Image (tube, rainbow, N blue to C red; front, top):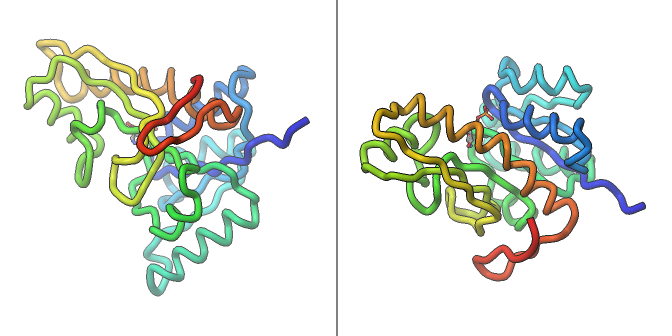
Length: 209
Ligand code: GRF
């Protein structure tokens, strides 16, 4: 049997997407080993979720280190020692060091709560994304799962799904609708990576999801 993909999940907050991935694994639909949860805030609910499922945790915050190099080295050595194949960002609010992006080229996946390239980039996170969608008057929003490159929210797109924007939506109601779509779909991209059914050609991700 081939070796199961070793995934490190990075999360800063509630980790509901992390939970949805754990649930898909428990249902037998997602075939990855969650080798570690890494987060900058040990009080985040994501840590509790990891502990509940006996997933090792690491609390690593940029502020714990003298400089960015030390921080980067710590992350890289932890990932290397666990033979990590795939990094899954699940609401991770800290910068991913450039050296890590380069080393794990097309092996870091992120989920964004809108249809990129709209409503993404620096400062576009959480409720701000949904408020921007509403303020613009967009009729459709959705989710984007993509590989991470050196620029925020720009890497090759693995999958997108749409969400309706309703006339009476608030940022909260839209966020709730979009989050459900995230939970229902993030695992599909992770599984496609794990099964090796997708490949990256330039900006395009080709293959079966
Ligand atoms: C999600 O909306 C995701 O798209 C974004 O951060 C949020 C994380 O939510 N990257 P949760 O912590 O998974 O509940």
